Structures are given as structure tokens and as C-alpha cells.
Image (cartoon, rainbow, N blue to C red; front, side, top):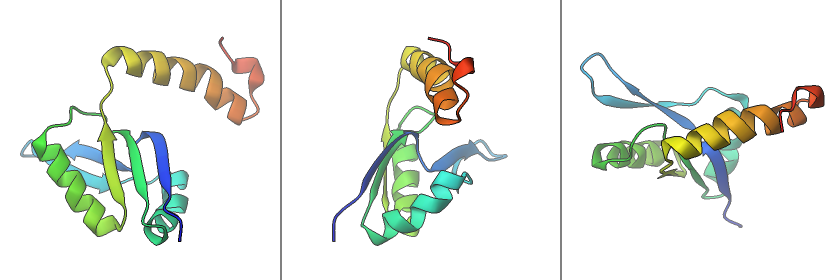
Length: 109
């Protein structure tokens, strides 16, 4: 069996703070995450992406616990505010998303 590694802008889960201000991991609800989770689980997969928050020991522990429950590894990648703005707000939203959705006229190069 071949191991699968998925690299995405965001991780397949969401990190939210609860009422007490503690971090909590919630599985993602997008269609790509829903489709890929069983494949990642079956292939001993790893998912790498931005965690949307700074990566401290508490976040790493939560993601490790999520990984154990999900059946595949989740590894965060840090991004600077500049990289988030340039890549996500720029390239991803202004070029890649319109191209992938056949909306080339909305591309902003």
C-alpha cells in the first residue's frame, strides 16, 4: 500500500476557542475533506497545511489527539501574515479559485 500525503492551504479540521477560551479541534465540513478523509485513513495518510493560528504546544497536542481519532496524521505548517495575504487572499482567491470554477473572467493577475 502506498502512503498518501495531501498538502493543502488549510488543515482538514478547524481550531476554535470554546466559551472558556480553550482551543478545540472540530473536523472540517467541506466536500474535499469529506471525500479525502476515508482515503487518507485507508492509506496511512498525512495532511499538511496551515492551522489558522500560531502553532504552540497546546495546538500540537490537540492536533495529535485529532490525528489519533481521525486515523491519519495532521501536521500544521506556519505561515506569516504576509504569506497568508499574498497567497490566500491574492493567488488563491484572485487566480486559482476562478480558474478552477471556470470563471476565468474573474481572474485578477
